[in-house]
Image 1: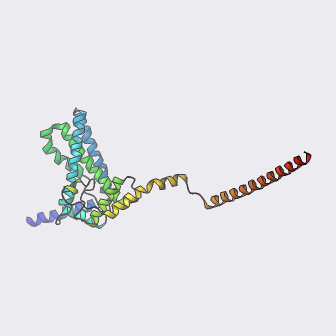
Image 2 (image 1 turned 180 degrees about the horizontal axis):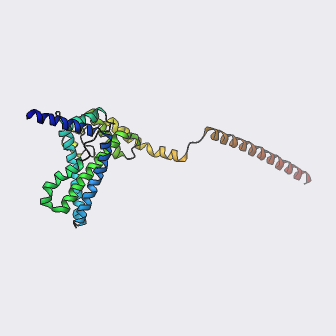
Image 3 (image 1 turned 90 degrees about the vertical axis):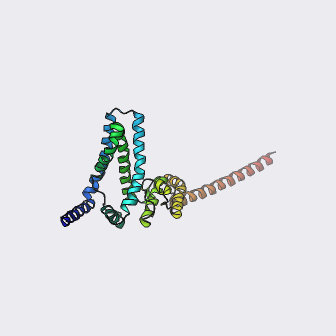
Length: 262
């Protein structure tokens, strides 16, 4: 009987590993990760909860997710061999591959949070708190995808470039920078590492961004145009000098003629 359970466990694990490597699962996860927080927010709104309580509940959930993200990444993804660590190890081996937890993860997590919260907080608060958690999970998924598919130089804002830099450090030092959406818990729990070279490069790029944008908006000046302008200026100056000389000569001759008549 024990051997049968082990065989079933291995089969289930193999099936889940194949699912997590599927491109279809990768795309479906984004759809469900967006639908779940929206559906929960709609449910909370239908409950008649006030706007202030709804916003506060949502923000509490979003803040709670920041620690949930850190805890799962540090103590489940980077632990001795397990299904979670195996999936995450495959991501570290090939960060650009379509690796994601099963697409039903957001639904399962929502049900897991709903069970203990609902009897205490009721429908409205529970729905908005979990909506905040799952909205944080969706933001994490999108940000993590972009960090591996968009170059840091193409990111428009400095704070977002810093997230890119922090996560790139994690892939070189797996025991540092577990937070993808924020470095708060890394700083508080002693796992934060900041590359001075990367930060200096980010600061330098933003300092030089304003002049470079101004020069791009003005447009480059062709060498031929500049040379042609210089030639025109030189010709104009020579013409002016010639005319001024001829006028001076005319004035002198007129003065001589007037003096003779006198």
